[in-house]
Length: 201
Ligand SMILES: Nc1nc2c(ncn2[C@@H]2O[C@H](COP(=O)(O)OP(=O)(O)OP(=O)(O)O)[C@@H](O)[C@H]2O)c(=O)[nH]1
Ligand SMILES: [Mg+2]
Image 1 (cartoon, protein in one colour):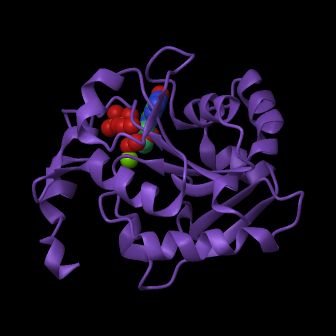
Image 2 (tube, protein in one colour; image 1 turned 90 degrees about the horizontal axis):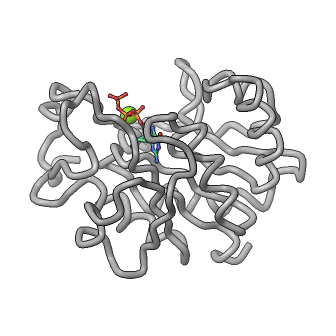
């Protein structure tokens, strides 16, 4: 699969209520989270999009090749609505969906997962890491054709990613002990304190 068949969609429009300040702008070792996630995405995909209501807030902290997409719904509708919004505006066959609060993403692992996309059946709508606790939807791959099922689910009032993923054909990505740390999700000030120096990760 050519890398233009997979676009990256980074979500930077959440409320950050648990953190108490915009997570996209939080710096780890001098570099904002959103800058980090965009750099990883640029390594993996030739088109990188950030879905947000605040493009002017982020324009200067991401590379010029990164494109901003507007939200069609009011801020804070959640990541499932944001994915749907993104899929309607992107015409790649697959979208790599990434949250902005994943400071430890590793491009090599994402590239390995991307290479597996050609092996999944046409009916598979999503390829998503799975832990014992459930899916990790905010670091996963979604087929453009998932749009119809997503829109129907939202139309019925559904907002839960886990519920949606339990209803559609999803291919699970196995997490190894070496790949799990990259999914460390930084939601609270306490999570932030748990981030070790980059050299020790
Ligand atoms: N564009 C967009 N991104 C969203 C929206 N809701 C959540 N996100 C993003 O989805 C990712 C995961 O969000 P969460 O960490 O679950 O929630 P949050 O709203 O950022 O923070 P909390 O208020 O603490 O739950 C983050 O990258 C958010 O920026 C939304 O409505 N629009
Ligand atoms: Mg989060």
